[in-house]
Amino acid sequence: MENKEQAMKDKETKDSSFKNINDIADSSIDNNFNNDTAEDDVKNQSPDRLNKSRLNNKEVLLMSHSPHIWSGFSTSKIMYIFLASLIFPAASAVYFFGLRALWIIITSTATAVLTEFIIKKARKKKFVMDGSAIITGLLLALTLPPRIPIWMVAVGSAFSIAIAKEAFGGIGYNIFNPALAGRAFLAICFPVEMTSWYLPGSFGADAVTSATPLSESFVYEGSKAALYKNMFFGNIGGSIGETSALLLVLAFIFLVIFKIIDWKVPLIFMATVAIFSLIGGDDVLFQMLAGGLIFGAVFMATDYVTTPVTGPGRAIFALGCGLITFVIRKFGAMPEGVCFSILIMNGFTPLIDRYVWPKPFGFVREKVKVKAKG
Image (cartoon, rainbow, N blue to C red; front, side, top):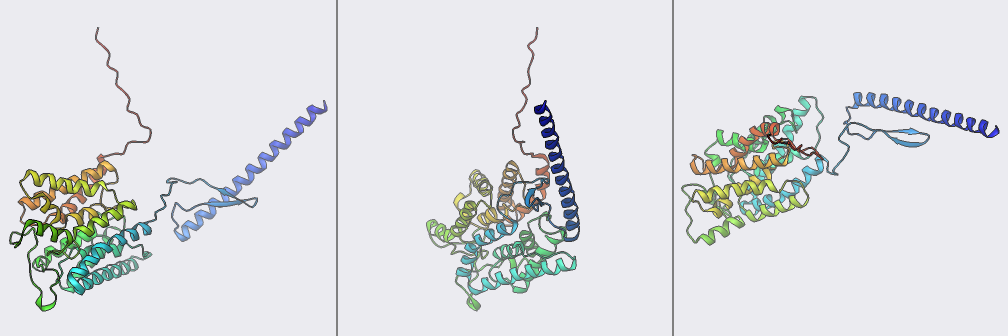
């Protein structure tokens, strides 16, 4: 009898303890939720913030909506690693085209940051130095001719940020690659200045004009082996950051090691151009090294915002870029097609994302059973 009474007392004590703990936890969760809601309303904090409350001097982790897994790379970290890779083509630009290239880089980058700062303030939005404006300005600079007037560089950089990026809502909302949009804008507005090329190492008044390898007027006095060598190392006319295939390949390896870009996209892009060039009877190696193919494939076609989110979608995107590049080079009035091919495929990105869905984890397609007749 005493054992039975003792057991009932223990049960009542246990039930009372659980009830008290649940009441305290519910109260703590409610208070934490209310506090978080108030803080979010005031400070506009991000939804992935870690919510914690105190219960008996112990931290209680509260569940929130997805995503719950963080890769370890913030937007700023990704941007600055990407920016570090641009040191390779930027160094080649200064080496081959001198201080003039450095002024182009500084002007374009500074204008991009200043433009974003002004627009953010005008829209009463918080300005965050996440590196995206710096990358846009630097990418645009590296696609420009070495002797373009500095004021045109500033105009193109301002257009890239103000129109191609901020007019759509800022980072993450722009449809087209801002740097390429700025370059296309300059090519349409100032076609003469955007097609004036000079040999590396020729500065000042003694600068020697030269056609790019893809131009019909290009003539090279020497063997093909020597031409390939100059194109591989960068001793050839062209945009300041696109001439050295060697440093662009090193930048590609750097980005792949840090898992910043999908390595398949540049390879599919370039392989598509190579295959169609082979079919069309063109010099495949020449097409690979000439123009901005490697630069565009590595730095532009791998943009997170303006390219598809799925692996198959990115493959379709790269395939389309390669095909359009070949068509423009082969049949178009322009010698280079990388810029406009990527911009065109940027426009198809929402459509690709709509119809190319990722396979759900653990999904198994149900087999259709066919009944045998009679």
